[in-house]
Length: 242
Ligand code: URA
Image (cartoon, rainbow, N blue to C red; front, side):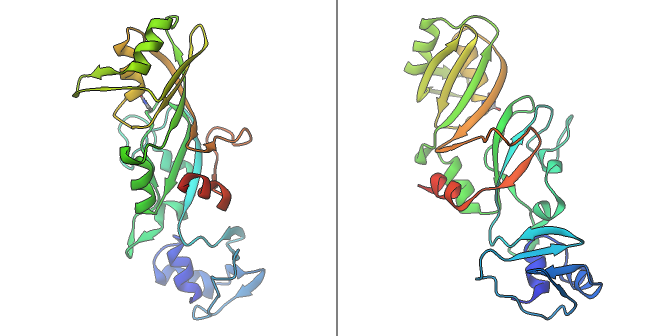
């Protein structure tokens, strides 16, 4: 692949901008300066390391990243009242092209502005679809803090299923267990709008704080601080695709 095409595919702007980065000596590939926009690089030699303006990058054919979402950010490219989670990512991740158009990575399902924790983002449409599809039953673990003490009956109702206002069919938690008087661990396999908050409200309680700590086999790592992101490893991706 030509270095200009590689940079374009990784979100460094138009091919013309990418060629300019190379011509101006701002790109190194595997530690060697590169001045020729037509130079070819072998992307099959994984991992292919390169740098742009001194910042190191690794080539990824597709982007799969995790973010520890802090409170106060919206999962939208056009946020209303709060900043967008996408502002927590570096520009190349926001500008990666899909079918030649700047599209960037997309959140795999949304978290509310005040929800914290594990958010996946990708530019792989099939992956996003699979992770969001209720058919694939990908479990998501939520740590819920409730306003009132949770009682055994409320927990039993969450397990048995509650009716929400947009669907007569009851929705049930895949699991629900108390983790303290005001703390609940809830696993859901669907991703309906405000689902946790609405389910907890349906049993007569209220969510005070919500944190997602796991998606499928992938747990939010302890060393990923709120607001930080990182690429998924091949093993983590395999866990999610399993
Ligand atoms: N359920 C909610 O109510 N909010 C979230 O952010 C995620 C799940």
